[in-house]
Amino acid sequence: MLRIQNFIGGTFSDAASQRCLDNIDPSSGEVYGAIPDSDQTDVGLAYKAAAEAFDSWRQTTLDQRSKILLTIADLIDEQAQELARAESKDNGKPLKLALSVDIPRAAANFRFFGHAITQFASESHESTGQNTLNFTLRQPLGVVGCISPWNLPLYLFTWKIAPAIAAGNTVVAKPSEVTPATAYLLAEIVQKAGLPPGVLNIVHGTGNSAGQAIIEHPGIKAISFTGGTKTGAHIARTAAPMFKKLSLELGGKNPNVIFADCDYQKMLDVTIRSSFANQGQICLCGSRIFVERSIFEKFKNDFVSRVAQLTVGHPAQDVYLGAIVSEDHRDKILHYIAVAQEEGGRVLTGGHKVVVQGHEKGFYLAPTVIEVKRADCRVNQEEIFGPVVTLMPFDGEQEVLNYANDVPYGLSASVWTSDLDRSMRMSQSIQAGIVWINTWMNRDLRTPFGGIKASGVGREGGFEALRFFTEAKNVCINYKTT
Ligand code: NAD
Image (cartoon, rainbow, N blue to C red; front, side, top):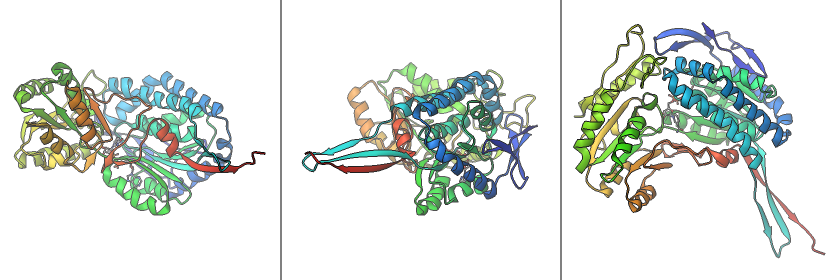
């Protein structure tokens, strides 16, 4: 049994209440460990440790911080196998995906911000004629809260923590209670890398208890949150009246728009990934596929036959899809497949559980393609967050733009076309924070990342993240010229 502990002030401990939560392996459906069921007492202790560490951490040189972040990155690389195995077991994702995407990206997050902080500059404004010079200080906020979801556990946890500590803040962080394992291992790594006690404090537990205590804590100056839109709205309602800075990265219902003039083979290969990578549990997955009518039937046949061959199985095996993260989540996805059929949608492949021999209680689902009749049906409007995509034909550019934009969300979009003018028109008109043309999930960590509408507020990535985790203070000096 894996017994996970909180990491507060550089020390590992159970929840003050001694309460625990079960940690379930989605590939077998069995409890394989316990995590602390922390509450406001634990968050209070974590805050205290973070507040005590802040004064000295904020005064470290950029070089000192950079060095520690780069060491953390190297240690993650060194322990990649162990971390990937833990991530795969905790989340159900294929081990090879954890090894090729999640863990390398966690190292890259620390490496990126380890370098970025040495290049982060602020502005100065000279007011000629008034003999004044303004310059902007970028000061750390103090103790900040970082809360992350289960789909890319270490990848998204570190995407917040790295810029927060690089900018000189100290952190109270909470990973998802569904996937706590790699955050626990990260605590050992940061300790080994020489991060001073109290700079990063990791509190495990549920959203309603530990998470709620973080967002409500009067001393925590900012909340960087990634998760569902409903939770994001709740966090905004709680934290905004306390004037906390907020970065909210929320749900998506992303369109994948395919024009007949695209590079067909490349589009088909990438569309398999953008639909089903990580069992479709990536906020950026293109879950609504719109195909120009002249190639709709061909695409439908080719796509469905490729999807039907995707392998589903135990995540430690060489499979394309592992297990869904939890039983509740699998049931939610099955519910949406039923809703689609009630609304007149036709399941072209999948739509059912998969029983994996030797792991009969695991939470497996077949990759599912549903042909829908209307762009405004529920399964095209609500986030499912699983291995389910919808297909619909379209005739014209304006028509598909309307379909693409007619959702509450606005996170990302993919467009497939070889017409440069059209790619520009679509990029300008699609309501999303990120538009990919002839690609998907191609990420340069310097670029702004985030959504519009119900997909959130604020941008992560590059200097945007360092701006979020610092307060701008303008200093105006009036000087004599003689
Ligand atoms: P969730 O909102 O249920 O939980 C996310 C985190 O918030 C967890 O750590 C949870 O414990 C915590 N939480 C829950 N209630 C809370 C509360 N009252 N106060 C404070 N914290 C609370 O989301 P999830 O199911 O873990 O993740 C899936 C969602 O995340 C999907 O909607 C997906 O689109 C979204 N997501 C978005 C992005 C992005 O970058 N926009 C990336 C990944 C996932």
